[in-house]
Length: 548
Image 1 (tube, rainbow, N blue to C red):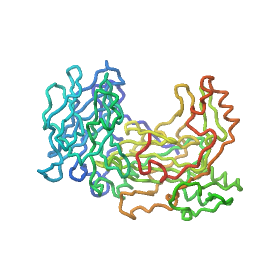
Image 2: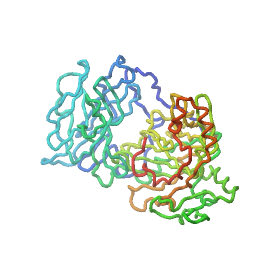
Image 3: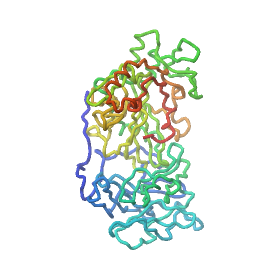
Image 4: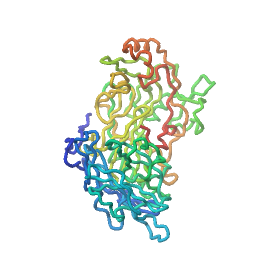
């Protein structure tokens, strides 16, 4: 059954609109279940408390004469609650819906000796634009750090009351993120904590970094602003288990598989019950695996001693396992803090017993492979990031083989009449994408690479209903029971060597002469064979941030 979907952009289509229009989700947010600090509008970071500001007055927008690719707008936050102080201003590309935030902060208790927040001593003018925009860096007192930049439309130095600096021990180092503006030698970047992941406590303020030397953009030592640090060990803003279920049921994406998909997902217990075997180095016969995976080796390292495979001597069972079982499939959910606990990442893992052969694109030709790209056991995932201030969806990460990318909520497709995004899984490879179509991985300018074809079909999984929470380390011990199979740290498929000489020769003959001798670097897949994939806990993004 098809689900009626649409691409929601809130009417924002004009690149040179006089004002970026705020984005809003298709539906209002629900009332979340009761908890502690989640969705209360404020988050405790230890000695300071922060609020998220999303209402702004625009101070300056670079003119269209500078080129559309360099057009950015700069904003001063308004509506700061009484007792809270601005930490910096906000900027974003002018051709996008207004979606950003900056934090404002206040001290949790008075401290006359070493207050958490202090006024700057004065400001340094970083850059000005034709006498109509001025960028000021706060100069902090000794022992304090600036965490943002402010922008004015006049040359007079701002009042020190305008912003606050933060005591150094309450900050973390940060680094340049995406480049927002480049005008000659002047450049502006978003900022993010240098260390990101489950155990990292750096908090993004939402402001920006700017300088007049491009070479310093990625030099962490040269960054003269910082991020905040969450020193609250309880992670006060994170959702409890009831709230996590409510978030998944409200935002859980609809996952579409290609109409010509041969290799469907399944649940892990279905995979085990229907014939998957555990193999051990030095033994020719595999061992049946219990439906819970309770007889799998636990912990250790991926040393090649054990692996999972399909039975070699029973073609019927082997082919049945390759096809998967859509009816049994479910999403396996890992819930973790992000950016110091002001966001929650809900990571949804999907398991497919078999990854099918790749399809290459060489110019106008489509070249399906017979074996190249095949492997047993395929773990893919997508992540939706939730603001812990109000429970609003912020962005999604779409995993695509060994990489992927973040997509802002304003660029997502939603199921009609809901706040549930749509995820498209690619034919045979199961990489995830935000919109239907063909995505080429490789040299797109030459039209050479691996095809990722995605489309809507009757093969669909509603992750808001068919899911199982398998890990949430920040919750109290025992709140989530991790399944036995999650502790299997070896490979979910054997190492495969492709008998691919004929296929590779076919590829070479189709390539332009100029790239034939470097053909191995043209395709982001292994041409001669590959090791079996590891499970979710062995992936870098399990404890770390998503890798783009």
